[in-house]
Image 1 (cartoon, rainbow, N blue to C red):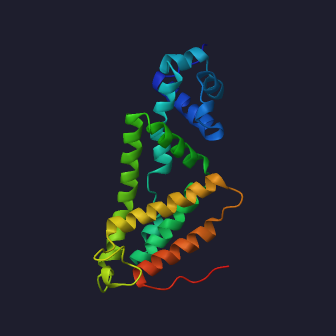
Image 2: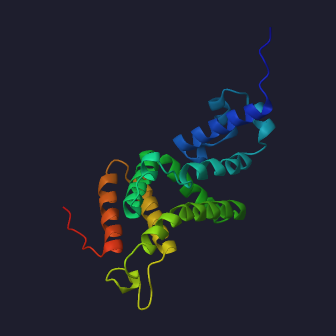
Length: 219
């Protein structure tokens, strides 16, 4: 008996997974219809049925890249931490380890950011995803800022300038910068980069912001 026909929706999903695998391993430049067909173990014509050109396939991958790199993951163990500053530290650590653990995903985010310079729809998708990622930190950041016994504007090291105060939005933006800075360094120098050192420095910076503690010297 002939094999059961695979639904086109399932076939398309297989092609998308294969395309992402090629991109993660070799970069977007390697994503050709033939390379993806070989990875998915389907004919070139099958890929052509779903994607007429390489640029269509590349554009279709952006949502998967954004899901891997710009969707905040909060582990159950982190969610159970009651003190906001401790929970922020733990969440930063978890995200740094997750994104730098396999820097190929973040490299693809950088590739799409570059493509977005000339491609408005992709640029808008990336920007919206990063805004949502930053918003994911905002509630926790608000708990840290609003939980301070005195306004952060009155603390040394908390002022951005005369009359400026640290806001939840600003703290969330710093958190994202720390996570993505960690990921960027993991892309540039994966063998020499240390998540531990990056996290320790970030933790001290946030601790100083919240409690006005001096940053300890490190070797």
